[in-house]
Length: 323
Ligand code: RIB
Image (cartoon, rainbow, N blue to C red; front, top):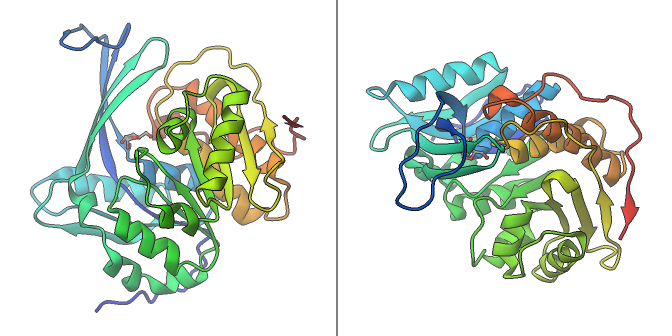
């Protein structure tokens, strides 16, 4: 078996998805059975895993990605590899395989910035526990591991269990029945408001009081630390070490939301970078910095295309409160 000889220090290791985004922009999202005229189309580099990795790399983190794309007759895989190299991501463990197409996403974005996404993950389904074993040196030395739910769950569990540093599980797309061992295995369990409602079975989260129920339920389900991102409301946090304390970190008003696609990934990438580089920062500072990067992203079109290079609002003291 091929084993990682990589010794370069990696701060943020992403075990996750690589997907090519096909994005159509229209005035509004279509209803079921409706055909709409759009006003713009573009392809982009996406997939929650790669997005989070690129967001961390653009912040300044040394990153590596473990993922699968198609070999050969589908040029998307080779193009994506080249793109990740341009973003300074270590791709020693991004494997080009036969048998499955490179993952694709069909995305519709409305003028309000809202989106609908359907993914067909293809080659991402080939990621397995063997890939964890092959990259075991990286699993021993990286500071932060980031995983999502666009790759097989058993492989994700193997990755989380093999990792010795801080792990962030972005449980997206959300599952109605998330295996409890996955929730328990991660240091930080992070979801958006829709995903929190689906994961917990709680009512839709539209205000802070609902978010408190979601945080509480996720702690009960075994999470060690929980972050729920709330779009324009910022994000909330709770920890099993102090389960009755709920923290809200708001985000400033954004002048115009253009495209929300990938904003959650920008948040996770920035969180991973800040945790790797500034591990002694309090939670509200880590979350506040990640909020800023997500807020930047929603004001620009595209997924990775919308992520900032370098920190946003460096050195700012972020407001927070218990709720
Ligand atoms: O979070 C946004 C991402 O979700 C898109 O890039 C798409 O590829 C899907 O994975």
